[in-house]
Length: 220
Image (cartoon, rainbow, N blue to C red; front, side, top):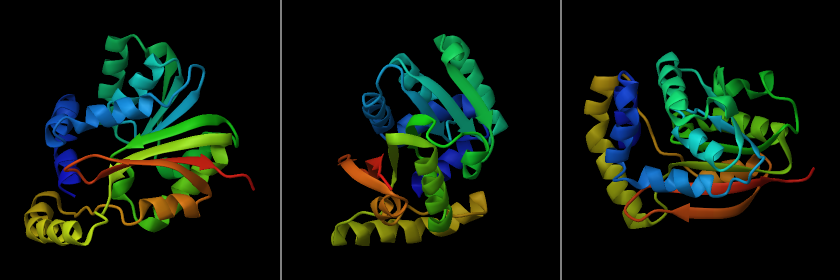
């Protein structure tokens, strides 16, 4: 929740977005993105949903992939284009401006090897999450994988108690500033499984509510 509140604020100055998120996560976001990129193979066609400034997609290009980055924010995509020019990755990174709820408008079934995302899907309800993950499954090739990293509810009882306490204290100032509230994802693993994926790996980070889940498209 706290991460998303900060992210919405820094979106008004996207040139500071990556630095702000790095500071907010104590540097963990770089390790998370490096971990995701390490699962990419040369020649993969990768879709980065909610690509933002393009930092994750650029890491995938540097691993030998071709990337399609999808985002709805003009300001973030403007910064993404600047980063692509600076990194020399523009020829292997295509930008699509649209909502991530419209994946099948832009991608044929069985056309993508890997789908990646960080700090995006936590803004959505379970209904929209399930819709998006089902569309992800459709456009992935057989055996294709999805790597999703986001804030989730802590699993331990004591951790949940303190996290809920922090959320309660922060709800009023958060809503006063942003006019909306954000909540970590409950049962991200379960939603991904319900959408038709087999969970191959899960990773958490110390002193963090981040979780990285790798799901592989199940056969019908």
